[in-house]
Length: 102
Image (cartoon, rainbow, N blue to C red; front, side, top):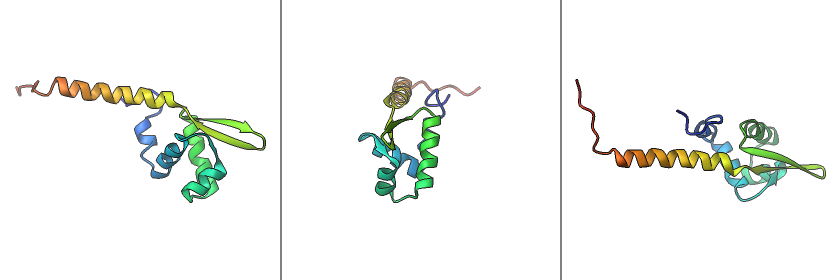
């Protein structure tokens, strides 16, 4: 089972630039020009990653004048964190539950 029910969050965040974008957006909405400045990446590259994050339901786009601001949606991250916590709890509860070999 994947960590999240949406496109696999872990796989999406495995890309270093995408993870950096998500980390920056956790501090509040930003437009592409902010993300280009903060990451040093090229605008088309940032836009491509934002498209992937939007399609995955991790980011939303909000028009503001002639700019578009991108905002991180916390719910998919909270759901993935819950799933990871559940796995850790199961591992702790079953640490001595070794299966015998046939």
